[in-house]
Image (cartoon, rainbow, N blue to C red):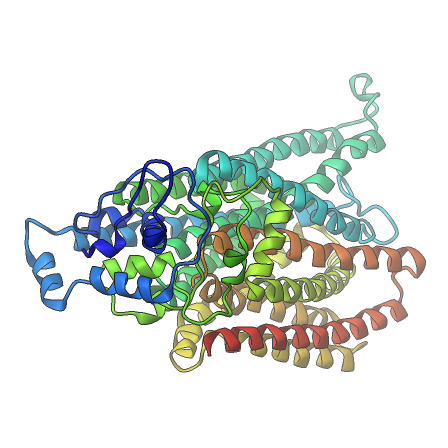
Length: 587
């Protein structure tokens, strides 16, 4: 390798003539895989006075060219039995991605069980809020409204675990917490349900009338609804962050849809078997099964990180090593809209002989070094990140609007379902079959439609397609109001959930994979936990006020459907802005 990429460290300061070269070396060090392929470049101790600097594109390009092996040398190294590292490395990366994909599928299966149980119990007449005149629907928007502040607290807690032990420790910790809450809550609700089933006139149970049991069960169900709604996105995005860190953009284009399809298969099978599980284990028993699923998911994720650690490509970077620092203006100006910015993933692919030029020229660099400045909290970091990467800011707004719409059509669907299907177990079974269809159609998109679509159409076109399709559904539902019944109320919710599980997932990951470590971990968590939950919570507050003032009447439903149509137009406008920024960055 040329001496242009070697770090020159003087006693007390870094030579100005080699500052850009040292930053290139720092960039290469951010991917631990460089240790296997840099052909003799030795890692040296970071100097304490390193500053945040923006490396010249030409210097990085030359370094990548010098590190890229020729086709003949690559073939020799692969065929040589003595030096077979590239092939073994590729196998290890595939194995780690497979393990994390299985962990994701098991996690989504557990969520299907938890969601079916929590929603049925929340609106039940026994332990839940269903004994009221509105069937518990007035409490549902209040619970959704609490998801956003809980998600902010959860994001702060996640940032602490990420800083303390890295992505592996954070995922394992939060998965086990989620499993523990499901199991303990299931045990407590089972005890409360047993009291309701006993003869309350007996002396030993005289102090436990039905109202007192509900005084404990209702707050627990309220907390469980908020908890599982906030945690599902956190764990889901941690799985995808690992996969996006290991795969290159070109690999992601081929693998993201099948990986998401694997999760849809698990969700579809589990949701379709909800009625069978209820008959075998009971409605509350679904919570115990969900907790067991989260434990299995944590074990598989730990195995994936173990393979990555053994292979030397465990995700790490700015948000892990240098989280909480303040970067210079040069770093803030180096955003996705600047053409020619090169990522650490680009250096990684160059060192492995990849011919994917897009991988090395489409994403920004994290130029943060530990001595760049003072500590900042998680929200200040997210704000600075959105200023540095404008596409994330546009995505933040798009997610808020789309989740407002999703929360609204979800409420319309649940309102119609509660009034149509009275029995709790039958309602849970119906909802399970509904989500089985959602996951099944999403799987068809992920395995067949999206891979074919991405061969002919750029991934960012999906951002325009989703609100356009949703606009057709909301307008049709509004036009047929009063005659469509449960099927009509379910159509819009079915459409938006299917797109969230398939199209949005593919579009999100194709966007995140081209960004840096900070965007993939911190940015993704901020968008999913703050923007997504804030959109749902804002709509939930509005729905709560509507239910208190007007109640569940025929005219109220008409206004809700009209509001859904308006929010669909707002979603389309925000998607057009996001699409424009992505188009600008590509040009």
